[in-house]
Amino acid sequence: MPGHVRSDEAGHEAPKHGQQQQPCRTERKQQKHRGSTTTTTTTTTSSTSTGGGGGGAGLAGERHREERGRKAGEGRSNLGFISRTQTAKYSKMGEQPIFSTRAHVFQIDPNTKKNWVPTSKHAVTVSYFFDSTRNVYRIISLDGSKAIINSTITPNMTFTKTSQKFGQWADSRANTVYGLGFSSESNLAKFAEKFAEFKEAARLAKEKSQEKMELTSTPSQESAPGDLQSPLTSESINGTDEERVTPDMPDTPDTPQHTEARAEPSQNALPFSHSSSNINKHWEAELAALKGNNAKLTAALLESTANVKQWKQQLAAYQEEAERLHKRVTELECVSGQTTVIKSQKTELNQTIEELESSLKAKEEELERLKAEVESANEFQAQKESLAMKLQDTESRNQALEAQLSDLGQRLESSQQEREAFRKSLRSLLELLDSKIFELTELRDTLAKLLESSSSS
Image 1: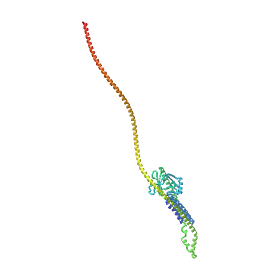
Image 2: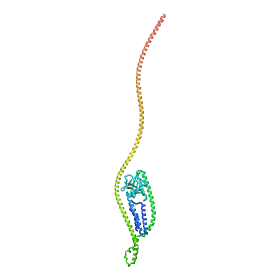
Image 3: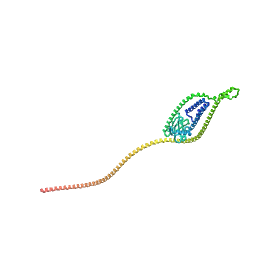
Image 4: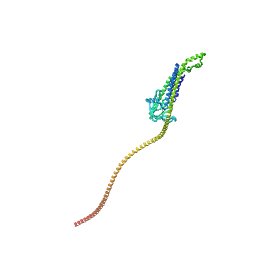
Protein backbone atom coordinates (compact mmCIF):
# COMPACT_ATOMS: atom_id res chain seq x y z
CA MET A 1 0.00 0.00 0.00
CA PRO A 2 1.34 3.53 -0.65
CA GLY A 3 1.13 4.67 2.94
CA HIS A 4 3.10 1.66 4.11
CA VAL A 5 5.79 2.09 1.46
CA ARG A 6 6.14 5.80 2.21
CA SER A 7 6.44 5.12 5.91
CA ASP A 8 9.31 2.73 5.23
CA GLU A 9 10.98 5.42 3.16
CA ALA A 10 10.55 7.83 6.05
CA GLY A 11 12.20 5.33 8.34
CA HIS A 12 15.20 4.64 6.08
CA GLU A 13 15.93 7.87 4.21
CA ALA A 14 16.84 9.87 7.32
CA PRO A 15 19.84 7.69 8.24
CA LYS A 16 20.88 7.70 4.58
CA HIS A 17 20.81 11.46 4.46
CA GLY A 18 22.51 11.65 7.85
CA GLN A 19 25.68 9.92 6.64
CA GLN A 20 27.42 13.24 7.01
CA GLN A 21 27.05 12.73 10.74
CA GLN A 22 26.03 9.19 11.63
CA PRO A 23 23.77 9.06 14.69
CA CYS A 24 24.42 6.60 17.45
CA ARG A 25 23.03 3.07 17.06
CA THR A 26 20.41 3.60 19.75
CA GLU A 27 19.15 6.72 18.01
CA ARG A 28 18.94 4.92 14.64
CA LYS A 29 16.98 2.08 16.24
CA GLN A 30 14.63 4.57 17.87
CA GLN A 31 14.11 6.30 14.51
CA LYS A 32 13.42 2.96 12.82
CA HIS A 33 11.04 2.04 15.62
CA ARG A 34 9.20 5.32 15.19
CA GLY A 35 8.91 4.60 11.46
CA SER A 36 7.43 1.14 12.06
CA THR A 37 4.97 2.54 14.60
CA THR A 38 3.84 5.14 12.09
CA THR A 39 3.33 2.38 9.53
CA THR A 40 1.16 0.39 11.93
CA THR A 41 -0.96 3.41 12.74
CA THR A 42 -1.40 4.28 9.07
CA THR A 43 -2.43 0.75 8.08
CA THR A 44 -4.89 0.35 10.94
CA THR A 45 -6.50 3.69 10.20
CA SER A 46 -6.78 2.81 6.52
CA SER A 47 -8.72 -0.37 7.38
CA THR A 48 -11.41 1.66 9.11
CA SER A 49 -11.61 4.64 6.78
CA THR A 50 -10.64 5.15 3.18
CA GLY A 51 -9.12 8.61 3.74
CA GLY A 52 -7.13 7.63 6.84
CA GLY A 53 -4.15 6.39 4.85
CA GLY A 54 -3.42 9.85 3.56
CA GLY A 55 -3.46 11.31 7.10
CA GLY A 56 -1.06 8.64 8.44
CA ALA A 57 1.29 9.09 5.51
CA GLY A 58 1.15 12.84 6.04
CA LEU A 59 2.18 12.37 9.67
CA ALA A 60 5.04 10.13 8.55
CA GLY A 61 6.09 12.73 5.97
CA GLU A 62 5.96 15.43 8.63
CA ARG A 63 8.23 13.43 10.92
CA HIS A 64 10.44 12.56 7.98
CA ARG A 65 10.87 16.23 7.08
CA GLU A 66 11.62 17.15 10.69
CA GLU A 67 14.13 14.30 10.92
CA ARG A 68 15.87 15.29 7.68
CA GLY A 69 16.03 18.94 8.72
CA ARG A 70 17.50 17.97 12.08
CA LYS A 71 20.05 15.66 10.41
CA ALA A 72 21.08 18.39 7.98
CA GLY A 73 21.61 20.76 10.92
CA GLU A 74 23.73 18.15 12.68
CA GLY A 75 25.83 17.59 9.57
CA ARG A 76 26.61 21.28 9.31
CA SER A 77 27.39 21.62 13.01
CA ASN A 78 29.82 18.71 13.02
CA LEU A 79 31.84 20.28 10.21
CA GLY A 80 33.08 22.86 12.72
CA PHE A 81 30.58 25.72 12.36
CA ILE A 82 27.24 26.16 14.15
CA SER A 83 24.17 27.93 12.87
CA ARG A 84 22.74 30.90 14.74
CA THR A 85 20.02 28.76 16.31
CA GLN A 86 22.53 26.16 17.49
CA THR A 87 24.88 28.90 18.70
CA ALA A 88 22.05 30.33 20.78
CA LYS A 89 21.30 26.81 22.03
CA TYR A 90 24.89 26.16 23.08
CA SER A 91 25.12 29.64 24.58
CA LYS A 92 22.05 28.78 26.62
CA MET A 93 23.60 25.44 27.52
CA GLY A 94 26.83 27.20 28.39
CA GLU A 95 25.15 29.05 31.22
CA GLN A 96 25.29 25.89 33.32
CA PRO A 97 28.04 23.56 32.06
CA ILE A 98 28.67 20.39 34.01
CA PHE A 99 32.41 21.01 34.07
CA SER A 100 34.61 23.67 32.46
CA THR A 101 38.32 24.22 32.12
CA ARG A 102 40.73 26.17 29.91
CA ALA A 103 43.11 24.54 27.49
CA HIS A 104 44.82 24.93 24.12
CA VAL A 105 42.87 22.98 21.47
CA PHE A 106 44.53 20.97 18.70
CA GLN A 107 43.33 18.66 15.93
CA ILE A 108 45.29 15.97 14.13
CA ASP A 109 46.47 16.89 10.65
CA PRO A 110 44.04 15.07 8.28
CA ASN A 111 46.77 14.62 5.68
CA THR A 112 49.72 13.33 7.71
CA LYS A 113 47.78 11.98 10.72
CA LYS A 114 50.92 12.74 12.73
CA ASN A 115 51.22 16.49 13.30
CA TRP A 116 48.97 18.55 15.55
CA VAL A 117 47.22 21.59 14.07
CA PRO A 118 46.24 24.29 16.60
CA THR A 119 42.61 25.39 16.29
CA SER A 120 42.93 28.30 18.71
CA LYS A 121 45.61 30.94 19.10
CA HIS A 122 45.17 31.01 22.86
CA ALA A 123 43.63 28.96 25.63
CA VAL A 124 39.85 28.63 25.33
CA THR A 125 37.11 27.26 27.56
CA VAL A 126 36.35 23.56 27.09
CA SER A 127 33.11 22.39 28.74
CA TYR A 128 31.07 19.26 29.30
CA PHE A 129 27.34 19.57 28.54
CA PHE A 130 24.38 17.23 28.87
CA ASP A 131 22.03 17.27 25.87
CA SER A 132 18.71 16.34 27.47
CA THR A 133 16.91 16.15 24.12
CA ARG A 134 19.12 13.27 22.99
CA ASN A 135 20.24 12.06 26.40
CA VAL A 136 23.95 12.36 25.47
CA TYR A 137 27.01 14.13 26.85
CA ARG A 138 28.98 16.54 24.67
CA ILE A 139 32.36 18.25 24.80
CA ILE A 140 31.96 21.74 23.33
CA SER A 141 34.45 24.57 22.93
CA LEU A 142 33.57 27.86 21.23
CA ASP A 143 36.06 30.37 19.86
CA GLY A 144 33.78 33.33 19.30
CA SER A 145 30.98 32.04 17.02
CA LYS A 146 33.05 29.09 15.80
CA ALA A 147 32.80 25.67 17.40
CA ILE A 148 36.30 24.23 17.47
CA ILE A 149 35.10 21.18 19.44
CA ASN A 150 31.66 19.56 19.17
CA SER A 151 32.19 15.95 20.19
CA THR A 152 29.55 13.54 21.48
CA ILE A 153 30.89 11.17 24.13
CA THR A 154 30.26 7.51 23.27
CA PRO A 155 31.03 4.39 25.32
CA ASN A 156 33.82 3.33 22.95
CA MET A 157 35.77 6.59 23.28
CA THR A 158 39.01 6.67 25.27
CA PHE A 159 40.84 9.71 26.64
CA THR A 160 44.60 9.12 26.59
CA LYS A 161 47.21 11.09 28.53
CA THR A 162 50.23 11.43 26.25
CA SER A 163 52.25 13.64 28.60
CA GLN A 164 51.97 15.37 31.95
CA LYS A 165 49.89 18.25 30.54
CA PHE A 166 48.50 16.89 27.24
CA GLY A 167 45.68 14.49 26.44
CA GLN A 168 43.77 13.35 23.36
CA TRP A 169 40.73 11.37 22.21
CA ALA A 170 39.48 10.17 18.83
CA ASP A 171 36.03 11.10 17.49
CA SER A 172 35.04 8.66 14.75
CA ARG A 173 31.96 10.70 13.81
CA ALA A 174 33.97 13.84 13.13
CA ASN A 175 36.77 11.67 11.67
CA THR A 176 39.42 13.49 13.67
CA VAL A 177 41.48 13.35 16.84
CA TYR A 178 41.23 16.18 19.37
CA GLY A 179 44.13 17.20 21.59
CA LEU A 180 44.10 19.44 24.67
CA GLY A 181 47.09 21.14 26.24
CA PHE A 182 46.51 22.12 29.87
CA SER A 183 48.37 24.55 32.07
CA SER A 184 48.84 22.05 34.89
CA GLU A 185 48.77 18.32 35.50
CA SER A 186 45.86 18.65 37.95
CA ASN A 187 43.60 20.19 35.28
CA LEU A 188 44.44 17.30 32.95
CA ALA A 189 43.64 14.77 35.69
CA LYS A 190 40.27 16.44 36.43
CA PHE A 191 39.35 16.51 32.73
CA ALA A 192 40.28 12.82 32.30
CA GLU A 193 38.29 11.90 35.42
CA LYS A 194 35.20 13.72 34.12
CA PHE A 195 35.66 12.09 30.70
CA ALA A 196 35.65 8.61 32.26
CA GLU A 197 32.63 9.54 34.43
CA PHE A 198 30.54 10.82 31.51
CA LYS A 199 31.67 7.93 29.31
CA GLU A 200 30.27 5.51 31.91
CA ALA A 201 27.08 7.59 32.11
CA ALA A 202 26.78 7.43 28.31
CA ARG A 203 27.19 3.65 28.44
CA LEU A 204 24.45 3.33 31.07
CA ALA A 205 22.15 5.63 29.10
CA LYS A 206 22.75 3.56 25.97
CA GLU A 207 21.91 0.34 27.81
CA LYS A 208 18.70 1.86 29.21
CA SER A 209 17.66 3.14 25.79
CA GLN A 210 18.32 -0.30 24.28
CA GLU A 211 16.17 -1.91 26.97
CA LYS A 212 13.35 0.55 26.32
CA MET A 213 13.70 -0.02 22.58
CA GLU A 214 13.46 -3.80 23.04
CA LEU A 215 10.38 -3.42 25.26
CA THR A 216 8.64 -1.08 22.81
CA SER A 217 9.65 -3.05 19.70
CA THR A 218 8.03 -6.29 20.97
CA PRO A 219 4.35 -5.18 20.53
CA SER A 220 5.23 -3.57 17.20
CA GLN A 221 6.55 -6.90 15.90
CA GLU A 222 3.43 -8.69 17.16
CA SER A 223 1.16 -6.28 15.29
CA ALA A 224 3.16 -6.48 12.05
CA PRO A 225 1.21 -9.48 10.55
CA GLY A 226 -2.05 -7.62 10.99
CA ASP A 227 -0.61 -4.63 9.17
CA LEU A 228 0.12 -6.74 6.14
CA GLN A 229 -3.57 -7.75 5.93
CA SER A 230 -4.79 -4.22 5.26
CA PRO A 231 -7.81 -4.13 2.89
CA LEU A 232 -6.52 -0.98 1.20
CA THR A 233 -4.58 -2.71 -1.61
CA SER A 234 -3.98 -1.81 -5.20
CA GLU A 235 -6.86 -4.06 -6.19
CA SER A 236 -9.29 -2.38 -3.80
CA ILE A 237 -8.30 1.04 -5.08
CA ASN A 238 -8.18 0.39 -8.82
CA GLY A 239 -10.60 -2.60 -8.87
CA THR A 240 -9.98 -6.18 -9.99
CA ASP A 241 -8.97 -7.11 -13.48
CA GLU A 242 -12.57 -7.76 -14.39
CA GLU A 243 -13.70 -4.45 -12.91
CA ARG A 244 -11.01 -2.57 -14.78
CA VAL A 245 -12.04 -4.20 -18.07
CA THR A 246 -15.81 -3.93 -17.64
CA PRO A 247 -16.17 -0.12 -17.73
CA ASP A 248 -14.18 0.03 -20.96
CA MET A 249 -16.51 -2.38 -22.82
CA PRO A 250 -19.27 -0.89 -25.00
CA ASP A 251 -22.64 -0.32 -23.34
CA THR A 252 -25.36 -1.99 -25.44
CA PRO A 253 -28.85 -3.19 -24.49
CA ASP A 254 -28.07 -6.59 -25.98
CA THR A 255 -25.59 -7.44 -23.26
CA PRO A 256 -27.44 -7.68 -19.92
CA GLN A 257 -24.52 -9.41 -18.22
CA HIS A 258 -22.31 -6.51 -19.09
CA THR A 259 -24.97 -4.12 -17.82
CA GLU A 260 -25.08 -5.91 -14.46
CA ALA A 261 -21.31 -5.99 -14.30
CA ARG A 262 -21.17 -2.28 -15.01
CA ALA A 263 -23.76 -1.48 -12.37
CA GLU A 264 -21.60 -2.85 -9.56
CA PRO A 265 -18.52 -0.74 -10.39
CA SER A 266 -20.69 2.34 -10.72
CA GLN A 267 -21.78 1.90 -7.11
CA ASN A 268 -18.11 1.75 -5.91
CA ALA A 269 -16.81 4.42 -8.28
CA LEU A 270 -17.46 7.32 -5.87
CA PRO A 271 -15.45 6.03 -2.84
CA PHE A 272 -12.63 4.84 -5.11
CA SER A 273 -12.37 8.22 -6.83
CA HIS A 274 -12.54 9.96 -3.45
CA SER A 275 -9.71 7.77 -2.10
CA SER A 276 -7.64 8.37 -5.22
CA SER A 277 -8.07 12.13 -4.91
CA ASN A 278 -6.97 12.00 -1.27
CA ILE A 279 -3.91 9.95 -2.21
CA ASN A 280 -3.10 12.36 -5.03
CA LYS A 281 -3.38 15.28 -2.61
CA HIS A 282 -1.14 13.44 -0.18
CA TRP A 283 1.49 12.78 -2.84
CA GLU A 284 1.27 16.38 -4.03
CA ALA A 285 1.84 17.55 -0.44
CA GLU A 286 4.73 15.12 -0.15
CA LEU A 287 6.17 16.39 -3.43
CA ALA A 288 5.88 19.99 -2.25
CA ALA A 289 7.52 19.07 1.05
CA LEU A 290 10.31 17.26 -0.78
CA LYS A 291 10.80 20.27 -3.04
CA GLY A 292 10.99 22.49 0.03
CA ASN A 293 13.48 20.14 1.66
CA ASN A 294 15.43 20.04 -1.59
CA ALA A 295 15.58 23.83 -1.63
CA LYS A 296 16.69 23.85 2.01
CA LEU A 297 19.33 21.22 1.31
CA THR A 298 20.50 23.17 -1.74
CA ALA A 299 20.84 26.28 0.41
CA ALA A 300 22.67 24.23 3.02
CA LEU A 301 24.94 22.84 0.30
CA LEU A 302 25.70 26.35 -0.96
CA GLU A 303 26.37 27.46 2.60
CA SER A 304 28.62 24.43 3.09
CA THR A 305 30.43 25.25 -0.17
CA ALA A 306 31.03 28.79 1.03
CA ASN A 307 32.14 27.43 4.37
CA VAL A 308 34.48 24.98 2.59
CA LYS A 309 36.20 27.88 0.84
CA GLN A 310 36.56 29.64 4.15
CA TRP A 311 37.79 26.42 5.75
CA LYS A 312 40.36 25.98 2.98
CA GLN A 313 41.66 29.48 3.64
CA GLN A 314 41.74 28.78 7.36
CA LEU A 315 43.38 25.42 6.68
CA ALA A 316 46.10 27.12 4.63
CA ALA A 317 46.63 29.62 7.45
CA TYR A 318 46.65 26.77 9.97
CA GLN A 319 49.16 24.84 7.85
CA GLU A 320 51.44 27.87 7.74
CA GLU A 321 51.02 28.27 11.47
CA ALA A 322 51.66 24.53 11.92
CA GLU A 323 54.86 24.75 9.85
CA ARG A 324 55.99 27.71 11.90
CA LEU A 325 55.15 25.86 15.11
CA HIS A 326 56.88 22.74 13.77
CA LYS A 327 60.03 24.76 13.13
CA ARG A 328 59.66 26.29 16.55
CA VAL A 329 59.24 22.81 18.07
CA THR A 330 62.36 21.65 16.20
CA GLU A 331 64.26 24.64 17.56
CA LEU A 332 62.94 23.94 21.03
CA GLU A 333 63.92 20.28 20.69
CA CYS A 334 67.45 21.37 19.72
CA VAL A 335 67.42 23.78 22.62
CA SER A 336 66.07 20.96 24.78
CA GLY A 337 68.98 18.75 23.69
CA GLN A 338 71.37 21.56 24.48
CA THR A 339 69.51 22.06 27.73
CA THR A 340 70.32 18.47 28.70
CA VAL A 341 74.01 19.09 28.06
CA ILE A 342 73.77 22.40 29.89
CA LYS A 343 72.04 20.67 32.80
CA SER A 344 74.83 18.07 32.99
CA GLN A 345 77.43 20.83 32.76
CA LYS A 346 75.51 22.76 35.38
CA THR A 347 75.53 19.69 37.64
CA GLU A 348 79.27 19.31 37.15
CA LEU A 349 79.77 23.02 37.76
CA ASN A 350 77.64 22.80 40.89
CA GLN A 351 79.77 19.91 42.12
CA THR A 352 82.93 21.87 41.25
CA ILE A 353 81.52 24.92 43.02
CA GLU A 354 80.73 22.82 46.08
CA GLU A 355 84.25 21.38 46.03
CA LEU A 356 85.72 24.87 45.59
CA GLU A 357 83.52 26.18 48.37
CA SER A 358 84.70 23.41 50.69
CA SER A 359 88.30 24.06 49.62
CA LEU A 360 87.76 27.78 50.11
CA LYS A 361 86.35 27.11 53.55
CA ALA A 362 89.40 25.02 54.40
CA LYS A 363 91.65 27.76 53.04
CA GLU A 364 89.79 30.34 55.09
CA GLU A 365 90.25 28.21 58.19
CA GLU A 366 93.94 27.82 57.36
CA LEU A 367 94.14 31.57 56.73
CA GLU A 368 92.60 32.24 60.13
CA ARG A 369 95.12 29.88 61.66
CA LEU A 370 97.94 31.60 59.79
CA LYS A 371 96.60 34.98 60.90
CA ALA A 372 96.69 33.77 64.48
CA GLU A 373 100.20 32.48 63.94
CA VAL A 374 101.20 35.80 62.35
CA GLU A 375 99.75 37.66 65.27
CA SER A 376 101.66 35.44 67.66
CA ALA A 377 104.75 35.86 65.47
CA ASN A 378 104.25 39.61 65.59
CA GLU A 379 104.10 39.39 69.33
CA PHE A 380 107.23 37.28 69.30
CA GLN A 381 108.85 39.79 66.97
CA ALA A 382 107.93 42.63 69.27
CA GLN A 383 109.32 40.66 72.16
CA LYS A 384 112.37 39.87 70.06
CA GLU A 385 112.85 43.53 69.21
CA SER A 386 112.46 44.52 72.82
CA LEU A 387 114.89 41.78 73.81
CA ALA A 388 117.24 42.86 71.04
CA MET A 389 117.10 46.41 72.30
CA LYS A 390 117.70 45.14 75.81
CA LEU A 391 120.52 42.98 74.50
CA GLN A 392 121.99 45.90 72.63
CA ASP A 393 121.72 48.02 75.76
CA THR A 394 123.27 45.21 77.72
CA GLU A 395 126.03 44.85 75.16
CA SER A 396 126.69 48.57 75.26
CA ARG A 397 126.75 48.43 79.03
CA ASN A 398 128.93 45.34 78.79
CA GLN A 399 131.28 47.18 76.49
CA ALA A 400 131.38 50.06 78.95
CA LEU A 401 132.00 47.61 81.75
CA GLU A 402 134.66 45.87 79.69
CA ALA A 403 136.25 49.24 79.06
CA GLN A 404 136.07 49.94 82.73
CA LEU A 405 137.37 46.46 83.45
CA SER A 406 140.20 46.96 81.00
CA ASP A 407 140.99 50.29 82.61
CA LEU A 408 140.80 48.70 86.02
CA GLY A 409 142.97 45.90 84.76
CA GLN A 410 145.48 48.35 83.48
CA ARG A 411 145.30 50.27 86.71
CA LEU A 412 145.57 47.01 88.65
CA GLU A 413 148.51 45.99 86.58
CA SER A 414 150.14 49.35 87.12
CA SER A 415 149.33 49.14 90.80
CA GLN A 416 150.74 45.65 90.88
CA GLN A 417 153.81 46.89 89.13
CA GLU A 418 154.04 49.73 91.60
CA ARG A 419 153.48 47.30 94.44
CA GLU A 420 156.11 44.99 93.06
CA ALA A 421 158.44 47.86 92.78
CA PHE A 422 157.47 48.91 96.30
CA ARG A 423 158.15 45.39 97.48
CA LYS A 424 161.41 45.38 95.75
CA SER A 425 162.28 48.66 97.37
CA LEU A 426 161.09 47.38 100.73
CA ARG A 427 163.08 44.19 100.27
CA SER A 428 166.10 46.15 99.39
CA LEU A 429 165.36 48.40 102.30
CA LEU A 430 164.97 45.40 104.60
CA GLU A 431 168.16 43.97 103.32
CA LEU A 432 169.77 47.25 103.93
CA LEU A 433 168.14 47.43 107.30
CA ASP A 434 169.26 43.90 108.07
CA SER A 435 172.75 44.73 107.11
CA LYS A 436 172.62 47.83 109.22
CA ILE A 437 171.12 45.88 112.08
CA PHE A 438 173.85 43.26 111.68
CA GLU A 439 176.42 45.95 111.70
CA LEU A 440 174.84 47.47 114.76
CA THR A 441 174.75 44.08 116.38
CA GLU A 442 178.38 43.63 115.68
CA LEU A 443 178.93 47.08 116.91
CA ARG A 444 177.10 46.31 120.09
CA ASP A 445 178.93 43.19 120.54
CA THR A 446 182.10 45.05 120.04
CA LEU A 447 181.05 47.71 122.43
CA ALA A 448 180.01 45.14 124.91
CA LYS A 449 183.26 43.45 124.62
CA LEU A 450 184.90 46.67 124.99
CA LEU A 451 182.88 47.40 127.99
CA GLU A 452 183.67 44.09 129.46
CA SER A 453 187.21 44.48 128.68
CA SER A 454 187.22 47.88 130.08
CA SER A 455 185.49 46.79 133.18
CA SER A 456 187.78 43.93 133.67
CA SER A 457 190.65 45.99 133.28
